[in-house]
Image (tube, rainbow, N blue to C red; front, top):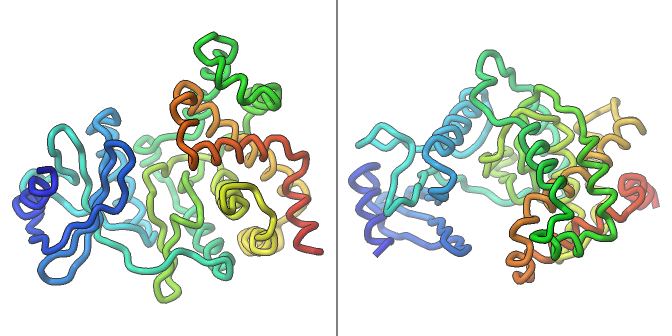
Length: 313
C-alpha cells in the first residue's frame, strides 16, 4: 500500500513516472527507496521521521541547496511541483526526493583526493546565512545534559556498560573541543563519499552544521579504523595520506593531538546520544559493535601516534 501511494505521489507531485521502485534500506519504520522512471532516470527517496518535524526537514533541504549554490558536489533535492516544497508526506511520514548520484564509494587510494575536496567544503563562506544551520555546540550541550544523569537508576545498564571509561566520558564532554565557525559535513565517512570519473561527491549531508573541521577529520579516521566490526590499524597509511593531503605542510604534533581529542569526544557524544535507548540498541549485533568500538577508542591511550607509527613501520 505504501509503495502504491508513493508511486502515485511521485507522478502527481514530481512528474516522475516510476517504472521500478526498490527498497534500499529498512530499519524499523525507516524505508528509503531507489526509483527509476520510464526514461531511465534514477532518484533516491529518503524517509525522515515525523518526530524530526517539517521545519527541520526544510532546514535539511535548504542546506543541500546551499551546498550546491556554493559549488559542492552533492545530491540535488527535487522540488514538489504541486506544493512548491522540497518534500512530500504519506501517512505522516516525510520523504525527500533526491536525484540519484551515480558512482562508487571512495577507496583507500582516493583518500588524498577526498581530503582536498573536504578542504574546499570547509572553505565555504557563511556570510549572513549562519542562522540557517545547526551548530555543533548544541550536540555538545545535549551530551553534557545526558552525562549529568549518568548516575540515575534509569541509565544503570548504560552506565555499567561504560564503567571502564566513565571518568573519561565525563571529563572529555566537560572539556569538549572549541567550536569554530566553519561549515562541516557532520557525518563524514567513507560511505558518504561517492567518486564518479574522479569527481568527489558528498552524500548524506543531513548533519551539515557550523562546527570544527576536526570533527569531519576525526569522523573519517574512525570510519577507516572500523573494520569488520572492530577497531583495526591496517588502514593507517591511508589515514596519514588523508591528513597530510588535507593539511599539506601544516600538519604537526599539536594538530595530531587535537585530532585525537576530537576523535574521542566524537565517540563520547555517540555513546551519550544512545544512553537512554541503550538497553534496546544493544540487542542489535551491528549496533552493539559500534558501541563497543567507541569504548575501544576511549580506552586507547594514543590512537594517532599509533596510526603514524604503524604507517612508518
